Image (cartoon, rainbow, N blue to C red):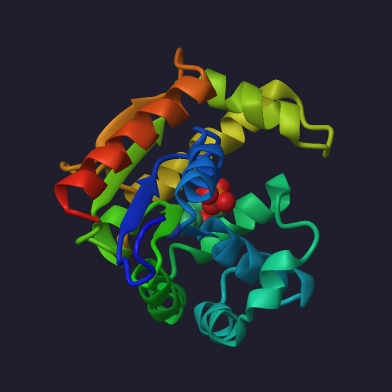
Length: 215
Ligand code: C5P
């Protein structure tokens, strides 16, 4: 059992459908750390903006929705759809939206007892001092095939692949906290690595850092 005062952040970044969520959940459960899927924050804001008819392109309104966000909003249905993912990556490019979600994520990262956060800017912006940084990726076609199997909206594989590439390009090219691979992150390429093998590598890496820190 780790000390309850442990401050230890695992920052997991990477493009859509690379396996970040699965690896993060497995790490959180293995080490007893709290877990935050930060994509859900942007998905919740994006879906709200679509549903109330104002759309995702009014930056002030999207930022207002981000400020009003509550934890219960992350439990809403429909946040895992392609529609929500597209809306998320649009509101995520708005600096005021990111600013409104910053404090919550920073506090979550440094809470006592350890935390795993996954997203696009965790190791670069939210928690540059994270004890462990992982960058999880995989070939576009492999990620699209995984996403295609999960989605229930009847999209073709080609549509899912095109969507995913458009979303990656938007996430990597925006000015506000673009997706980057931090130079000190361990790279996990899950193209040919099974999820169990990726989780085992991630666990070993976290253990090394915990041991090095005397936790
Ligand atoms: O990870 P997920 O696919 O749920 O993320 C949805 C979208 O939210 C991403 O495409 C990205 O635009 C945005 N996002 C972000 N920063 C994060 C997490 C997600 O910009 N930390």
